[in-house]
Image (cartoon, rainbow over all chains, first blue to last red; front, side, top):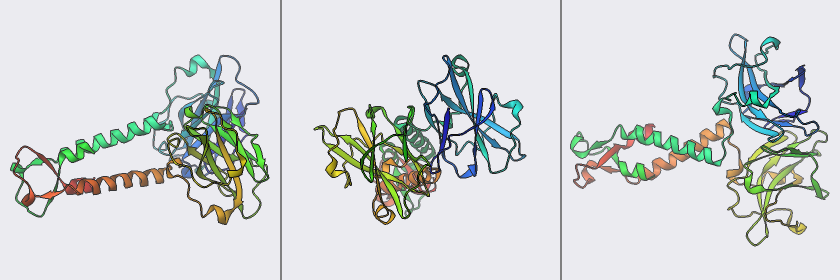
Length: 180
Length: 180
């Protein structure tokens, strides 16, 4: 029913079914993974009114499984790309794999898919940093970074009257930074 | 041999084989596509010493096919994510699909895969904006952007001796920009 693809590696199309409605893919060497694609194979749709929540699970320093909600796949949106680099220091979230006690290996993470009611999915909030940026959100991100930079640089701004005499120090007019 | 997945849509695993060594996937409604995943199915590897160059093809305003090299898949790196939003205003590049005259429909683009010698692939340069940023390349990209910014801002840098008197204009010490 599901496939999983780590960018740069071979596709996986045979998850481990750990419960009637739960599927798990192993991600070996997960610390070298940036993006993961989760998709429906197209062989079998979700039952009507149902979809899948997609979780990333990795072992914390003590070997305990930390689960984070990446997002969803549904019959209407049967595939998604998630960015998992950057998630490894985040906190875990509520998840439906609690009782399963998947064996944790230090270098192996998991993608877990839980088949649930669409109404239930609609009440869950994925970690924001897992969304692969579209053009718009990338532009927004860049803009925010530059805004932060301007705020940062401006905090050092001085007028000529405030300058301590030092003829060799170079200064950049603040409006140049702003216009850029 | 190949699969193709548009983020958010169903996977395609049956390209049109337009020549012995050339495969094409149709991408309907391509103007609403951000990311495309191209991957080997794992059923059949490339012959030794060979790999695939991956092209994006879209119709320009006069309906002519414009081809752009996105990147490569090989036995060692059997999948890749490409960003195709943003490519639609770029120029075409040299490509090996020239004689095929694929029928162009205004809203349908193509992914073309050409099986070639690895040595030949090594001499081809994909369009930079198609690479989905890994952590490293994103950091590099950001660093380059900031380097560009520093070079840009520095070109406006003045020392106090060069300043025209204007006590209200704010200046940012250049080393603040550099340190950031």
